[in-house]
Length: 91
Image (cartoon, rainbow, N blue to C red; front, side, top):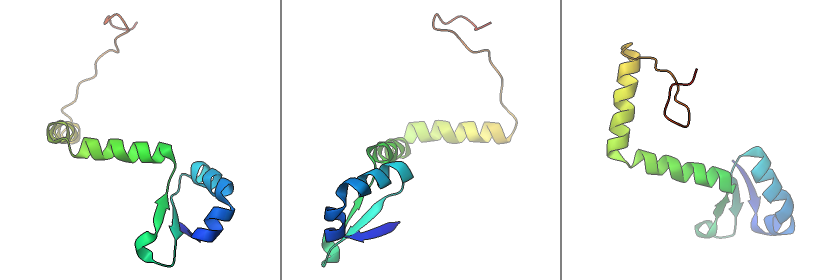
C-alpha cells in the first residue's frame, strides 16, 4: 500500500482519487499523529470488502459454502442444465 502525507494528498486529491480507482489499491494518508492516519479506497473495493465481511459473518451461509467445497473435493457434484427466466431448462 502506498502512503502519502496529508498535505500531499490534499494538494493532489483528484490525482490520488483517480489512482485509487484505477489501481484498485488502497492509499494510506499519513499525518503527524499516527492516530489520525486514514486509508482511502475506491467505493467498489469498499463495497466488495463489506460484502465479503457479511458473507463471512453469516454462519449458515458459510456452512453451506464449506459443505459445497467438501462435496467438490470429494467429487460429489452433479451437473444440472441452466434454467431460463421462466424456470425451464435452457436448450
